[in-house]
Image 1 (cartoon, rainbow, N blue to C red):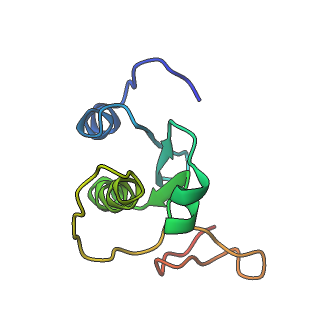
Image 2 (tube, rainbow, N blue to C red; image 1 turned 90 degrees about the vertical axis):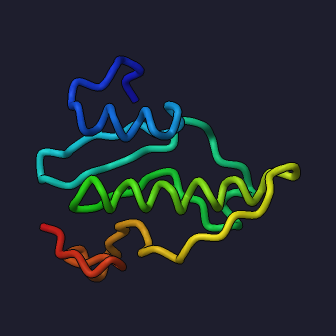
Length: 108
C-alpha cells in the first residue's frame, strides 16, 4: 500500500476522519475501497474485523469503517463498549457467485 498522501479529496477526507488507520481509494471499476493499515490480531478477526472493505458510495464506506472501528475497539481491554447498528458486511463475492456480494451489490 502506498504511504503517500491521497490525491483524491474525498478519499483523503475519509482517511483523515480515521486518523490514517485506513487507506481509501476509488477503483477503476467505480467502487470505493478501504484497507486497514495495521495488522489485525486474532481477537480482531474473531470479532469480525476485516482488512478490506468496499462499497459503491463513499458515505457507505465511511459507515462500514465506523462499524469496523467499533469492532476493533471492542477487542481493546481498556476501550469502553460503544453501540452502533449492524451495517452491511464488506463486499466479498464468493467463487460460486462472483457477480454478487453480501451487500446486495452486483460486481462485474
